[in-house]
Image (tube, rainbow, N blue to C red; front, side, top):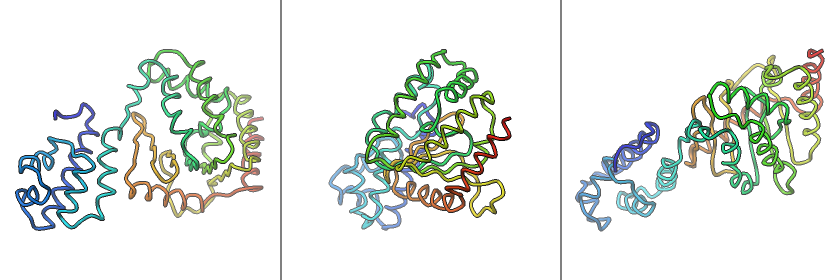
Length: 282
């Protein structure tokens, strides 16, 4: 298996191989003994340990069972699956324009029942107006130098966001106050966006909390992330969207979301913050 073109994916594969090697060593057995216990060749053990051959889920279960470490199998299996999609480069998705990026998560959005979203930079995509989304995506397209299909991308985002009104789904948002104040569009567009946010707060399946600037922090501001049920996390950076699926990773982000949520104000206090920003827009 040649090295993956993405250095982060390759590193994920090597990390998995290293964890399997450590499990074998902790069990005090050789690669040959492991192969005997698993019923495969010694060379297969070596290829897996050196990230030359990607193990299957069954291989990982057999490896952990042979090393009396079956409790570690779920995390390792998730890591194995994650390495194939752990680092989806924005430029690969965007090279044919932004519409494809908006449509790439459609199935996932339809399959998820509970969304937990933390944002520290922009209004969450779920809650964006067409005007705000147009301004934001235009700036992204200009920065990236991607084909100009902003109108189509905005339309795709608005179609995707219909999931917000789908019965039986729950949405919990935690926003930093900075999200309300960053000016990414005209004052008129921002005023309309904040009004839309106030309206979304009336939806029964939507919970919005805002962490005020004045709040004494017990948890630091973090990059934006979304938790889909208890199955996976999308964590955004400037050049990539990382997909995290290991149970321990999902639990870590869920814990972070809970603590950030505890810092947030809601209801009348959150509305007062939004009203204050609206007033500052003139």
